[in-house]
Amino acid sequence: MISLSYLLRFLEEDAPFGDVTSEAVIPEGTKAKAVIIAKQNGVIAGVEEAKALFEHFGIEAEVRKRDGEAVKKGEAVLELNGNARSILLVERTALNIMGRMSGIATEVRRLVDKVKAVNPKVRVAGTRKTLLKPIDKRAILIGGGEPHRFSLSDAILIKDNHLALVPLEGAIKRAKSFSVYKVVEVEVESLEDALKAAKAGADVVMLDNMSPAEIAETVEALRREGLRERVKIEVSGGITPENIEEYARLDIDVISLGYLTHSVRNFDLSLEITGKA
Image (cartoon, rainbow, N blue to C red; front, side, top):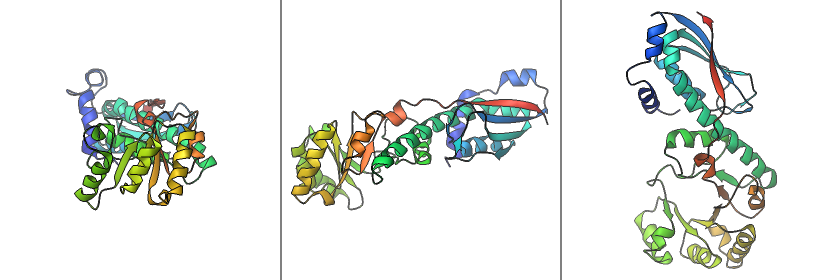
């Protein structure tokens, strides 16, 4: 679960001086029952985070659907019991977190299922195209995907802007000597550079913005040179839910999509007060 201190930042932003509406309208000490309901079908995520927030404010939270479970429209996800003001204080923050995480998890699960149906060995991964890393990376995991790098500190990924300053083979040599523990990945856009990267000792070769035909040709060239089994092959760029199966049929290891987090479609949930406790 994501740390409570991180989650509380969102609540502090939403209510820096308290919830003035609830404080003005609801008598102090009023107890209430409430339920969070799914308003669509999908994969639920963020339940543990919402539960932690409610419990931090003394609300009893009973889980009806666990993270990663399929949920149908109208089903209860979390049942709440406690101070009415506290329930309403946390409401929007909890729903925002659950909505974003469930939206990501639902789409990841959909794409993972599509990919596995044609090539069970290929993994679906996210990217760093997000500012809400703890939330988005956990949601990807819940959906069955790979989070990729969490930060710039996790692994070495040599991209075009690095190669604009340092030659490819030299960049890989420097990276390999920098640490024996860090994975070295290189982003390339041509068959020639893929061969150079593999020969220079890259652990992962990312084929960026290449068509399925170009990728197939590159993989075959790596195989002819006896290099295919020495590297993981990741493909990225230009991949959509509509064409992902074309890429999955190839002899690759990972498909990464920034789309999973930079174009999140929020999952619809609501909190309803069901009565006084």
